[in-house]
Image 1 (cartoon, each protein chain N blue to C red):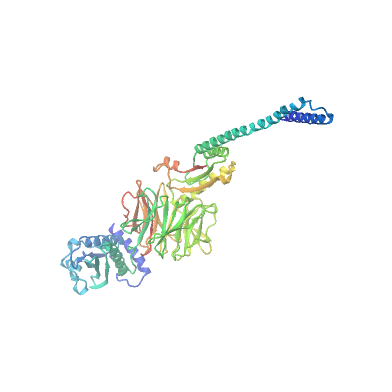
Image 2: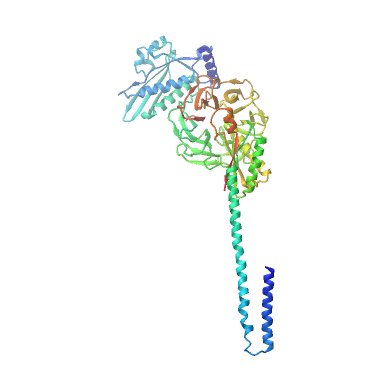
Length: 188
Length: 432
């Protein structure tokens, strides 16, 4: 960039000097060659914008690449946010839950366009109302942990469904364990 | 077994007698005498015979009176000639015949169906004193036979015990028979079912206004568990509380002027009192633990609720004026869904043992805990009849969820919801 500009300035200065020289010298009109050199200088000036115009083309490509990367991160977050599980009548996060939350937090931080609603769920044992409150405690504990891992608090909302939406309606320990959970509902 | 039942029924009867000394005609003495031998004769046509009227009336009345546990029905096979006579005046009745059969109380009646109008004449006679205890004439249509029978059953209890029965009232409940949880209404015997909501979301935990034909319930219709109010006859519906987070477990105060409920707007579930315009009147609890499931004392001064503030879920009582909190239950590891008797003395609740709930009752001072239900299946959501004689609850057994009714002492349990309905969360209306 700089060398070109300097060259341009140089050429312009040369031209000006030439004009001055021509003016001062009071040369006869027959000395045409100096005048015919002007088009060459104009060509240099015309080339300049052509070189600058190439840059927006580069930026558009970079923007497209950035959007694609964000889209990929968003898709990854939407599909990669996995549910976590809780112990009976507990809303304390287990070690396994914390590990999954660390992965979920990374996915969310990589995809800043994605908001997430955390759903708190319970197994069917326990009273309905108590489980609505417990499900909310689970969702809140999950949200707090994500925020502590650096996910912006404004991106995370919560809702409790208590025992209303079990994953597995069976009355077995395995089913109950599956139903005590927090789900991540990604929203673009 | 029959003796046990008789003693329990006597206890129940005594309980109500104590609260209403006037107008009682049945003497309370030895427990064994408290089952009243009753003869119910068929309604006789006072004009042209209308098929089904007498049968339906008989079935509804017998079911109500059997549930009351106060009567021993005299076998109709043994009835003599007087049963075939329309005797609407005590001087016409052959009381000797009824006395011979051991009946102490006698129901007689007749009906007339003319020009779409049904008239039912009913009489309750005291066989021993040969007197009319109560007489009623009901006028309606053929569609009102069940209602007339329920109303007369209430009248019989009023006449014999001094306190009306709860049979002409309604049960609100949640059913999943459309695939989604919606609010329904039915009679106390499970008939006349009617769906009230079409939210196609999740509708939960209804409660009747004690003074108006109105219900409150929670619904996820707008994406958050908000508290709704619905007028039953107009169908008009509005959101009463829509704070962020939970708006659940709404219960009208006994005077109908306030609603106790759980809100989690401050990031933790706490009990609040709302005005009927939805404004917050008062915060009742302040603890980081879970506080849910309010149930009013009948005097409106205290509220029983569930809290895990001492570890496991247990029943506590808060004084709504001083906000002093006292613990009610200590036994068991998981006690929930308290329901305070409209008579004030006892609180029924559900205790989780293993993976199943059973119903217990305890005095409001924490003494005299009794187990009311036994056997397989989880029994939850107990609520009282307006007269305190009966309890209604949900049973989850073998994946089928149904609604049951029983006497306050745990006897006489029977299913009232129909098969395959996934019916839960019953609430009993005031007298209709």
